[in-house]
Length: 278
Image (cartoon, rainbow, N blue to C red; front, side, top):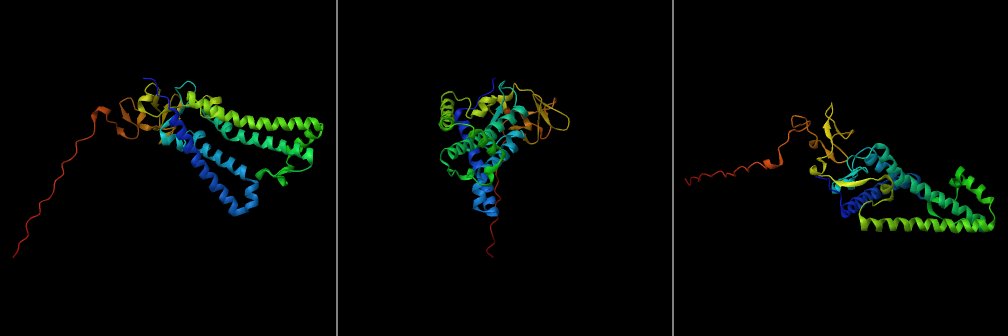
């Protein structure tokens, strides 16, 4: 029996659940910085706090080899393009980098470039929240951009500024078109998963009958060469792995599905003896 692919509603529910927990982590980290360093530092480092929170969330789940809270909520499992193995650590690392670090770097670079072009054009600095000019504006990247834009003519700077604005708007449109394409075909919800080829399958025992799951010394298990840590790695529980004699390494003998539940014990009620009226 071929593994069952996760349906689009399950993938969307998992992504929404992950966004909910990521938002809570971001809020807690931002609130801590706000209470310790004040509102000015929080506004200045807001984007970096969000980046650290996202990297921490996916680093402790996807990168470490475990399900995210959203994936566990709907019982789905990440698989590589072969749909027969869990993604390797390298593939999971690329996924986390594309999903969290790359959008931050791209947005920050485009905003810095836009600020430099506008500053060279009219001598003013637009206010853009955490990227407002100040001490952080004197970084090496900012100085390098300033030298590059200073060598351009005013017409070239205007053309480049329009191109940056169009490119930023195009990125947002591309993301929305990708989500619409997902609702039509139901394969990849995020662009990072499309680039890495990672899809989802339902975490059912029948869905993994054709996957190589076998025990290794020390009580751990291996799924096609990837060690499964106790109690769960990417949603695979230990009962899926059996010793050759049919005994689970942790829970002993596992009854077959056709065995059913044990019969319920009859409920008895203790008879109360009549009290003497004397």
